[in-house]
Length: 37
Image (cartoon, rainbow, N blue to C red; front, side):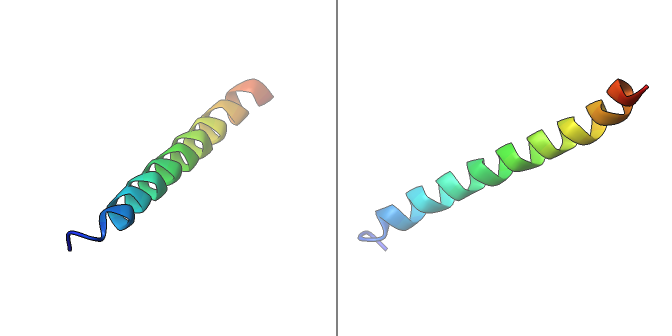
């Protein structure tokens, strides 16, 4: 497990990438109807 430090960093990067995608997606879904009016 000690030589798998890159795996942990990669998982952390993937986690933050998914968080960003979800946040952007939710923001777009919420703002699109408001701006459509």
